[in-house]
Image (cartoon, rainbow, N blue to C red; front, side):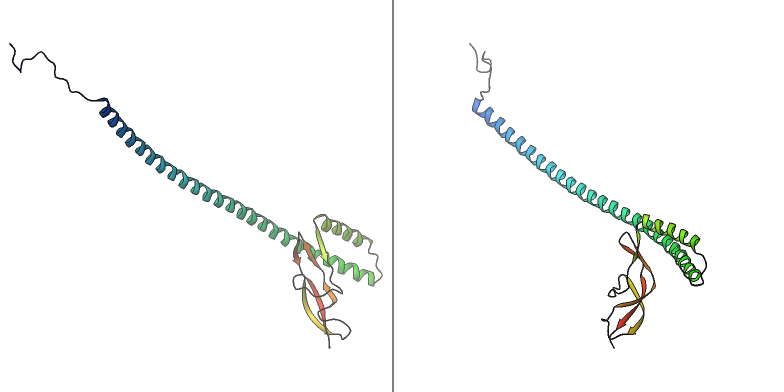
Length: 183
C-alpha cells in the first residue's frame, strides 16, 4: 500500500494554453512598444541629422557664392586699376595728337597708336561714356563746374572735360563735365 508521499504519480503543473498565449501576447506587445519607441527615437535622430545636413549644405553654398564674389571683385578691382592707368596714358596720347594737329605736325604715327588703343579698349568691352548734351547722371558723371544758360534745361551737360569709361556695366572712371543752370 502506498502512501501519499510515495505515489507513482508524477506531479505535473498544468498550464492551460490560454495562459501561454497571454504571456506570449504580453511579451510581444511589450517588444512591439519597445521597437516602436526605438524606431521613433531613430526617426527623430534622422530628422535632426537631415536638418543639420541641410543647414551645412546651405552654409557651404553661401560660402561658395561669397568666395566666388570676393574673387571676382578682387580681379575686377585689379583690372580696373590697370585700366585707369592705361586710360591716363591714352588721354596723354590724345592730348599730344591734338597739340600736334593744331601745330600742323604729322600725326599719322599717333593716330595709328590711338587706333590700336581703341581696338584694345573695344576688345575688352571698355566703352566711353557719351555725355555731351545729356542730362547729368551722378552715377556716370562728375560735375566740376556750373554755367548759367537760360536756353538749356537744368543739369544739361555743356562740356566734357575728361572722358569717362564703363567696363562690364561698371563705371571705371566717371566723365568730368560742366553742367548748366537756368539763370
